[in-house]
Image (tube, one colour):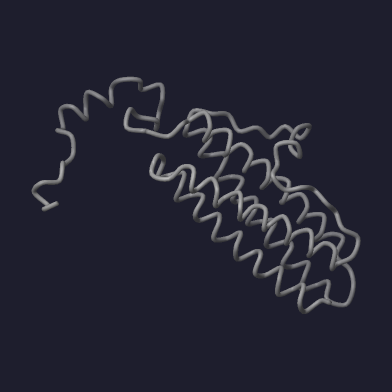
Amino acid sequence: MAPQDKPFLTDIKTLRERARQHIERGAVTSGYTGDRETILRLLGEALATELVCVLRYKRHFYMASGLHADSVAAEFAQHATEEQTHADQLAARIVQLGGKPDFNPDSLTKRSHAEYVEGETLREMLKEDLIAERIAIDSYREMIAYIGKDDSTTRRMLEGILAMEEEHADDLQSLLETNT
């Protein structure tokens, strides 16, 4: 298709008229093609997963002990901070899409894809965190595939979170190898 054959932007008058319609929807315009309810549910589950991961990493930070505990605890603290950033991003996107982020601790673990497993030894903690990161990686990949081109903003956000989860998994795998 030649550049001149591609459809261009809607004319300015129409854009302005559409922007005045349904202003109560905020960022969700008539051009939004995602299944908003499903995407909000997925984002809510991802939010719960991130919050569970924050809590688990925080516990692991405080409970880490042993020969290599200082360096591993530092990694746990960094991951907890980064998971909290993901939770904040997800909560903000839920609000942008007209939803309400659910921080209810009573149902957090039921909605989370990852489990809250404490682990007793440093090795068990690393292993449980790696398992949780692997769950998050697959969950985010599936969400990204589901969303496709329907919600590019959410997709890009999830792709950024996925990249960080893959980095976390790599870090944990390296720590497991050096702490066996």
